[in-house]
Structures are given as structure tokens and as C-alpha cells.
Image (cartoon, rainbow, N blue to C red):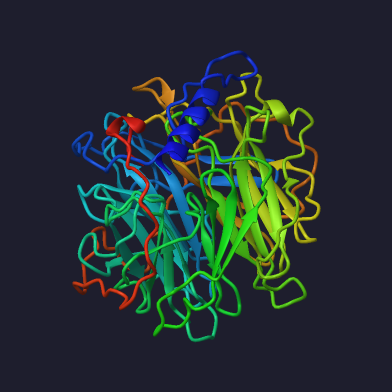
Length: 539
């Protein structure tokens, strides 16, 4: 295994050395998604920032779509000098006006010290409140949020030790309660989680997977389960074929599916008994999936991924119910740039279709289509968004693009830009990336997207800033492409006073102990952990 890992890493690293944009600019290969990360550490200490400098919050219209800034101060204004990226959105299914976004909060671009930031909206994303961070001066990264069917929100946050915490909000993200002492949610780097929302025996169970740089320091790609709503987490179990940098979902029968890239091929792995609390979860189906390429990193996003693998399942209850879908921005063989590729399974994950390209530009082989993500609407419609450089002469300036499918991804609607152009290389907070992913949640008529962009200009650095934005995408916006506005105009819009007083610092309600599973599946042989030089900055 060591020889295989080293060879793949060297090949991937060598190939990235030759990446260049259409203009001939070299792209430094500073990250390989299949290299393990060094332990999270304080590269830079927390830095106090005086919130004295503000500017109007950014509202950025583009055609039929409007992006609203989410990381704003108490008066609803932009905070000059900070940075925010890697955003994860949750929407209350019982009241779609209420939503929350978690993100990596950098109080100043002079330091890469990040914390667990969040904002919430009660008016369908038009205005946002940013109460603070989960814990002041506590290093946190890789935020992932989700909602159960009742509108209870959850926020999984990674500490510098590669251990985690789960937070819960019963007021739609206005305040959060820490469910266990720091680090006792187990987990690891690039963790993701999902919730069983079926009416079966696993209802309310939470499942998470990570990428091998784990809390228990084994180097094994692992799975964990919580049967009590995220308070305690059972002992980790090795996932066959090690799918990493991906997500997971539960079908309407309670079967758990994990998608990810397992050292080149993609895999979809199923557990049928994870929903049975009295049994140790096992994986009873492993399917290799062709997505027409591999995940990449270190290209247009120098110190990060160019996109993750997203897996989502149709819960419509109709003829497409329980279809399994996978989408990722991948580099196809013989190319240097990413494409948004999609595959589907209609037989419970036993087989998958040939890959379909979602981006429809003519010069697609020479452009970046990165940070691809998607979601499935309750009526079975598929919504996909991604960053796209098709309109940029420098092959760097990006726009958020959107496409949808009403035939299970066999065909996709004409792509449409939904944001103004922005330079993703500006506003780095001493870490050369704009995060590793963006996310979306769909409903009957459209999709709710959280993404990072650099629309705001910081006169102190003479650069634009990384900020978090919300935009609603929907079928019907595919009119003539509007003329891009070079710099969106900030709009002063007061943020309404929230009906519930937010709690800036979460307060633990219980100190939980991780309950081990009586008999865990034997672990695979751990992969060798790299030296701290395999990646310049932690996730």
C-alpha cells in the first residue's frame, strides 16, 4: 500500500507541475487531494480585530439572480479586513424562510487562524445576522451543517486535533448548543455527516465519514454512527475501498450510502444495517463508479481542492425514488482542467450510468469548472452549481453557474451564470485557497446556495475580500446572458432585529462519553501518514 500511495502521489504531483491557464500562467501544485494532511495546529495565533472599519454589505444582482452577503456585522454591514469561506447551508423544511450557513471565519487576513462562524436568516436569505463564532479563540475548520425533518439544525466542526464537535440549534441557527466536550464527536479531516429522516428503525441516527487523517490517529478512512442525535459517537469502523473527500446520504429504506474517491476510482459503498442500533454497522455493497476523471487540487485553488464528490438520493416518493446520484468536478484523462461530471444509479447502487458532463461550454477542455455541487429537490429535480471560468480571458476570474435536470440527469438545462465575475485568488487569509467546497439545498421551486466570492474591495490591502454569499437559483432564469457588472455595487440594507436573542458562544449542556461499539469491523492496514510538509497549510 505504501508503494501505491507514494506512486500515485508522485504522479499526481508531477502532472500538476505542468498545469497552466490559457494565458500561459503556471499554477503551483501545492495540494494533492489524495495526500494525507498534517495534524491541525496553530500556524498562527488568534488575532484580536477591532470592528471599526465597515462598508455597506454587498448585494450583487446578476440577471434574474441576486447574491446577498451573509458574513456581516451587528448592523448588517460588511466587515473590512476579515475573510470567510467554505460554507455549508441548512434550510428549515417546515419554514423555508429560515436558514443558516456555517463557514470558516478568519477575523483578519493577517492570520490563517480560523473559527467556526455562522449566520442565519429569517426572510429567505435577503438579510443575515452573524452573531459570532461557536467558541471564541478556538481553532475550527471544515464546517458541515444539516437539518432534520422538523427543522432542528446541526453543525459539525473540526478542531485542530482532527477531533470534532457536534452542535445543535432548535431555533433555526440563531444560537447553538455544544452536544459534548471538545473533541468527543470523534471524526477526522474532511468529515461529512447525514441524518436518517426516514420513519424506520434508524430514524434520527447520524452518520459521518472522514478521509483518513482521523481523531484516533490510525490513518484509516473511517465511519462513525450516533444513535442519540449527535451526542455520543460509537467507535470508528474502517470503510472498504477508502472513499474520501465525499459525502453520504440515506435512502427511504434506511440504507446508508457513502460516496468518495478511493485512491483514483470513485466508489459508492452501502450499509444496510447501520440503521439497526443493536448491530455493528457493516458494508454489504461496494460499487466502483466512473465519473470520467479524478478529483484534483492545487490548480485554480492553490492550497485546496478544486472540488469534492457529492452524493445525494432522490426522496420524491415517485418513480425516481431512491435513485442515487453522484457529481464532482474532475480532471478527465488527458486534460489539465476540471469538468462537472455526473452519474446515476437506478438499482440501489449496484450499477451506475456512464458519466455525463453538466457544463455545456464549447471550449470546456481549456476552462475550469470547479467546486461543483448539487442537491435533489423533493419533487426529484436536480440542481447543480459550480464556479466557471468560461467567460474569463485570464482563465481565473470565476462566476457561479447553474443548471438543472428534470429527467434524472440524462440531460441538463442550458448553463446560466448566476453571479458576477470575481477573482478567487484575492483576499487569501494567509492560506492560498477560497475553501474546499460550496453547498446547496433544493426545494420544490429552486435551490438555496451558499458560496464564497470576492465582490467587496478592501482599500487597506488593495484587494477584494473573501466573503460568504447566499443566492437562490431556479429554473426559468435561463434567459439571455446579461452583461457582467465588473464590480457589484454595495447596497446599504439594515438587518432586522432577530426575534430570538442569539448566543454568540455556545454553551455545552452535557459532557458526553464516546460509547464504543461492542464488536467493530476489523480495520484495514493504515496508510502511512505523511510528513508535515505534504501540505503547506491545514484544511
